[in-house]
Image (cartoon, rainbow, N blue to C red; front, side, top):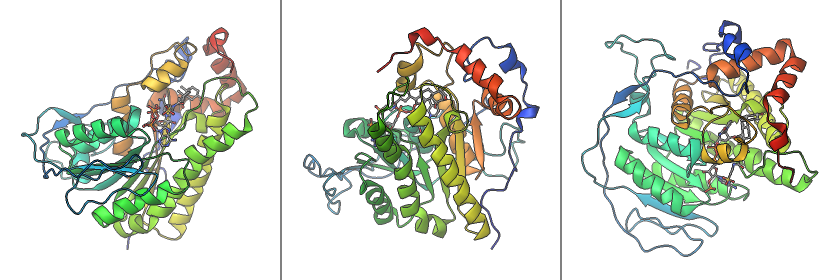
Length: 378
Ligand SMILES: NC(=O)C1=CN([C@@H]2O[C@H](COP(=O)(O)OP(=O)(O)OC[C@H]3O[C@@H](n4cnc5c(N)ncnc54)[C@H](OP(=O)(O)O)[C@@H]3O)[C@@H](O)[C@H]2O)C=CC1
Ligand SMILES: C[C@H](CCC(=O)NCCS(=O)(=O)O)[C@H]1CC[C@H]2[C@@H]3C(=O)C[C@@H]4C[C@H](O)CC[C@]4(C)[C@H]3CC[C@]12C
């Protein structure tokens, strides 16, 4: 059996090759300054049938898959929509995964992302908004089977509806909070019961955290570690038997804050550093044991999600990168079983380079790029 997990450095974009001009000339924050990457279109269509089952109780889920649907266990909400819909629409933007950004001859035999993910069984956490929501839509266009999670059922229902309109092979959700110790296993069990397996686990959710000075609230650190880190470990652990069976992928959405410690994000940054340590160590063990499950770490800069922009735009002056493209790059990297993806590539890569050659200079540049007078103390 050939090991098809991460091929060390097969795609690592060594920052030295990056055009440092973007960083050195920019008078603003180094987090942004994103570059556009190419993406191509592919058709999408809709499949499946729709049945209504009575709405669940407050906690019990609504599984609208049909008579065999079961109510969610206490503490979770379920919902499912598989329905025949109008003909799909063309024009969906999906990447071809025949290599990161390289021009690919039309006759290339390499499968595109859409082909690689068609019919695949994918869990996306934190899928009710932001990057997770956009990943769900891209995966829907690629005709994947989707299980989406977050806390807000109303938002998840809307995302599931749109996923079916975009061509998802099927779409369902479980709502609940990932600071609950039982939810990770509940989510993975749902995937096993519904699909009989799992191909990709995209760990994306984060708990609420403010962009401000650390105020000594140790309980917040503990809770955020549960939500942003321990639940990722729990989900990956519960999913591993199915991922080993399918030789699937784990995609861990992290941040520059998990490699470079900036001010005002101490609790959040700690959780991202923890992800880096745990999943990089696990990847080493997979290589030793020839476990064919890839682990992709996504190192993201400033992205234009509503929650991020509302949290930091008064302090960080620059234009954040687009969440739609960010989501596409994450999916592409996961589909290609990459070790990591930097997005936006140039500013993030340049910052990581600067961290290794002049860390104090980088720290000073970061502090200098913020509107410190606007930081709100809690
Ligand atoms: N936006 C940015 O600038 C950057 C983002 N990232 C990373 O990208 C990922 C997504 O970020 P972004 O899209 O901006 O975040 P959003 O705030 O837009 O989305 C967060 C998601 O997590 C869900 N969520 C929040 N709390 C919980 C909880 N306790 N249990 C389960 N789900 C929860 C939210 O849904 P609900 O409220 O319904 O539960 C929502 O779906 C994160 O891992 C983040 O660290 C990394 C670098 C930069
Ligand atoms: C402050 C943001 C977290 C917002 C939040 O609480 N989301 C959940 C809301 S919910 O509970 O209602 O769902 C931070 C999320 C991403 C951070 C940014 C990031 O990771 C990249 C940069 C890292 C750097 O160290 C600091 C600047 C960042 C742009 C950073 C800023 C804070 C976030 C936007």
